[in-house]
Amino acid sequence: MPAPIFPTKKLKKGENLFKEGETASAAYLIKNGYVSIWRTEGTKTINLATKAEGEIVGEMALIDDTTRSATVTAGCDVEVEIITRAQLDNMLSKAPETVGVILHQLLESLRCANDLIGMYASRPVSK
Image (cartoon, rainbow, N blue to C red; front, side, top):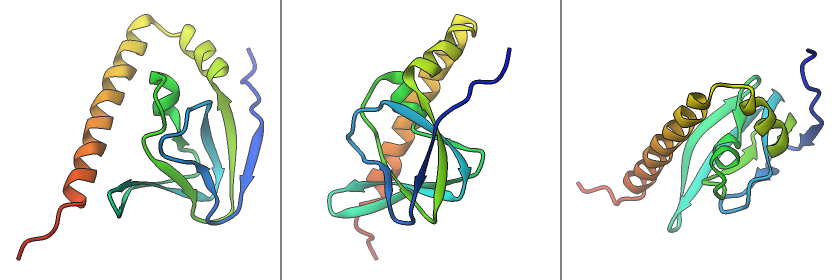
């Protein structure tokens, strides 16, 4: 069976791929370039990660059907492949049911970790 062909999207440096709080409709495989993943806590910007070629962003909200937990911004000119919910569901339908359970538990743990990072990063530093 041939690998699926995904449509692509190009972003310019500084352009958002998606924003925190948006409804998820796709995940994105980075074909070239890199992106920054960040969120806001009050008035502070918290950098969570940088992802580059070969890595996927946006999968969390797509898998567990929640809103985007962070904003993803192009750190340079970037090209991504778009993986829709239907395509992801099709791929997951071919995996054993326990894979879905594992993914949901991992995502829950990752969301909790991201919340903790945001909470601690936004606290004032005492001297």
